[in-house]
Image 1 (tube, helix red, strand yellow):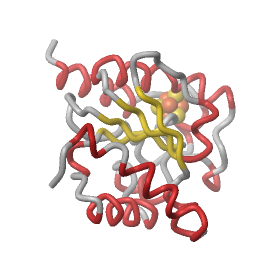
Image 2 (cartoon, helix red, strand yellow; image 1 turned 90 degrees about the vertical axis):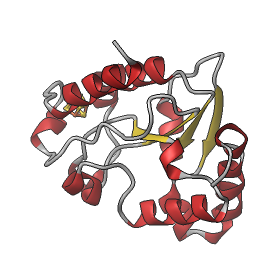
Image 3 (cartoon, protein in one colour; image 1 turned 60 degrees about the vertical axis):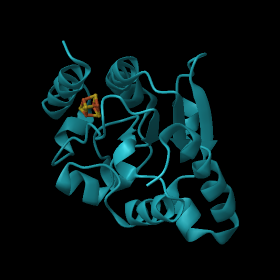
Image 4 (cartoon, helix red, strand yellow; image 1 turned 180 degrees about the vertical axis):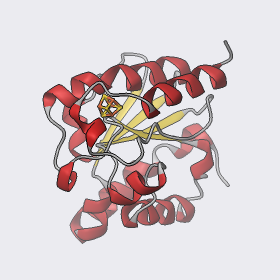
Length: 171
Ligand code: SF4
């Protein structure tokens, strides 16, 4: 199976998944988006309300800020695979439970295996829940929502994102 087909297959399984109680909360599961040969994956916690409404990752206010940072740094969003550790929204966007993370983890692991990126950027608290892979550079940074809200986080967040530029070239 081609990598793109394998990735689409994971996305289809995510969209119909009922492996944890968040299936009852979501409007749309959000498998993630980006090319099957992306050199960098961005991984957030789980979808917010706008992502849940549209089925797309990082499209709310923090997504707009992320897009703005990427554009200013000359990094094409379309070159990145953007997803989250848990693929469905949670009540009040609370942190997913350990059980929900465990139930959803096989999807992220499958995406990492198919894409085989050079670097993974963990956005925010998700960093504490992420598996590490020896052969993949692991970049921990703030969630865009935190960087947007707190100026003291902003420069580190933007500098951390700049590190991915070496893998994806520029616009
Ligand atoms: S959060 Fe993950 S495991 Fe739970 S229902 Fe959604 S896709 Fe399935």
